[in-house]
Length: 618
Image (tube, helix red, strand yellow):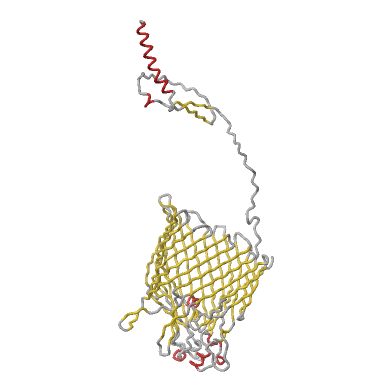
């Protein structure tokens, strides 16, 4: 090779080397170290040589990243040394001491005794049993008699008395079943005191001392027993069930008897939807059967002579009175539904199928109602919104009616109320201390229970049930403020809009009939203070709007007027001396208002009760 050729080859090699050197010095070149922290085992694998033909390419687009590997074994050493944590003491360990008895005694003005006694078994994972007995009564009078003439403000003795004795027990078996049972007796006593001395004299020409008190009493004796079975298996794909049978027998004054048997069963099964959504299917079955018997030998004082004329002669018990009655009524309910969560929505979907043998004895009538709820939380649980559509039927039995209005007439008419409720609810959880609930509910009600004075009783002191068909809009809410369990403030209120479906022709215009004893609003404010579980106080103010009432005349007609707005202030204070002994003071109607919850039945002016609670050490 001559010199010219050698020089040419050297120039070409130099020109080819210059861009490569420049590229390797460029800042875009990756020079990274990969540290593998694992055990290293060097292995030399056999491979064949790969022959690649040399090509000239653009180094800007094809330059590979230069990586170097440093494989070595090193111990990872932490410089942080955590401080020792002291052993935490779990609250309740060791278990707190339990007491198997509780006694509460009190006495107040208007001759008002109070007594409560509780006895129960101590802590046991498999069984529990006990007995409780309570009594609360008052035997005061309302108003003062006038020695010169019958007083329009004196109503005589206005007593009430409630006595309840119940024994209960519960057993959990090794097969994860829970058996429960209870048996009880209740006595409820009151008097039809809703007439003044002046009313008694003007209507019947009598003075109070000439009327025997038992002649216008109302006594209800109830015996009940309940037996239940429940499975405690909570596995997702296991069948769970629960069944309860309750028997109640009501013996009331004026020979009223109502026997009720109730069966309530529930089955549920958990499963998954689309292999990721958990769901539980339920089937709720209910049966309510009532047997009513009425065979009076007497009626409350003041009954119309036409009623008294058909009463049987006690000396001739074989004669059947036209007032005697016997009936069998029943309600059957099937409620299948499913609960599941889908995309953050909590969904309850089902239906209620009712067979009404209560309003339609003998034949029965089928009703179908929706049973659906959709709920979802927003803004990290700050707001929860709920929509509901639910319907049902409820029996207004004698045993239920007398708890709503204790001054009802014997053998009162019973009906079952059917209702469909559409609701929208919003809950605002602004903080751990503040909770706000707002709601609006539209209800369509048929045979809704209410009352009016019975014109068959001349003293206007006995009520009879009436059943209205109406629509009701209920707008309301409540506000709760809780400050570390020491202070709790609660305010609530509801506003009602009614529309009666019953109308009557007045002149040339059809007008809605008034709805009795349904307030246009109610409200309340309550404050509870707990000072170190030593002093506990509660102050409550309640407000009930005006309601319509009736004043029947002797000719059978009735006028309508408003009962005044009712308001009341109640207070309760308890001082806990120790775990076994405490003292309490309870005061109702501190504003000393003579309000009328039921027409012609004035209330006490302030009821004070002072007492103590005591636990006998084991």
